[in-house]
Length: 540
Image (tube, rainbow, N blue to C red):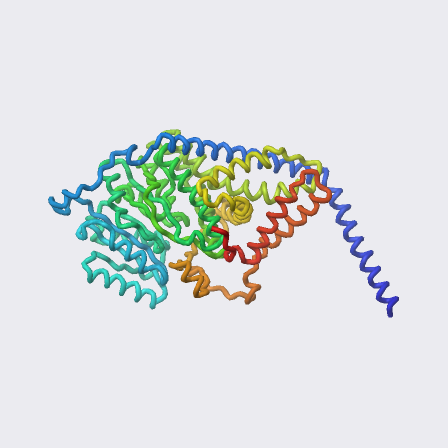
């Protein structure tokens, strides 16, 4: 009996060794003629893309530094005069008519906050209309939102509760339908707040003067402020990325070319601008960016005001964040494909502005940034550790990414100690962003998928009650997995093992000695893969 067991073990050992030998023979056959030249080509392409991204980041950093040193404020760049108190003596007609739109979809946790904040905006009550656009499919939530609107109406607020019999066009469709009501014709400006946004009472007093004294301004965008940034490590990472977006990308675009992408909320549009641009369109999942590009091609200017900040909420589960990032990467790439020729042939804006929109805004930020982050640092670099014949220059691996990381991180000084976590987490998310970008460019698969993230309203209350954020607009899918297995993300776990193997190989046989980075990156993939990134809480 023992002899049979021993013979079986020896046979299995020879079988495994034989399989491994066959794999090595095949690897050696294709390595020199195929793998090495292909990997060298990928390295060169990634290095070129890295340099392009590096130049873009340094350029924006320099412009931002000059803006800071010269203390350039929108109020100084454009004519801005506060709405004078004595104007009230002449009657409220001195104030333009403003429409406030609040699109909603099953917003059980936050509908009271957003409606309440909009209803207490400092503006003459007969010169403002609050329009709640409720696309909710949950009848109980619809009733609660309608009751809330009736409550504010009883207090003298001019509030309209509007519903549709379908959800065509999602948010863009709701906003478009809202503008068709007869009472909107008397309005000069429209303000948009998503359901989790709570503006300060002086929001209109600080934004409308830009329009009153500058007829060429079509959009004023405020900055977002995050109530739940400290909820977990993932929300801190999001805060770092979004702070850079607002502080640098939006500010530089506003100050240099009077153009940036509308963020979809916390902004004020001149209604004439909306009409000139052709109104809301639902051809992509970034209807806000679509409108902004079309408006700037009509010659309208945009203003970003960093000092005006509107409270909002960040996704606090990886599943919710992943869906959001898919939409934010797939939509712009798809819009780039649809509008590139239209932008290039436009006659109403300068050549430099067209180049900025096509190259800097779309190509570098919406395509190159996602692809090079994932392909270079999560695919090409690990593979190069397995192939000694392929050289990757140190400036492409160390100097460029370090500079880019520092430029991104300075926007959130309080999180500088988390920069390593931010880097590896962004690399994980780059995988999903790259996938979304390719889907958008090729217009395949989930190109028009729209998933609304349910808002929780109060992060501390949510943690105390133990409730978990879910996606409210995705069709319910029955999963074959349950319990803890439902948290696992196979793609992330697979890349985690790949990075771990490359780290082991580089430690034992490699020449680059990037194994520390590869090991940390593998841990990041594993943490996200097992679904615990939303539960890690950093030191504040």
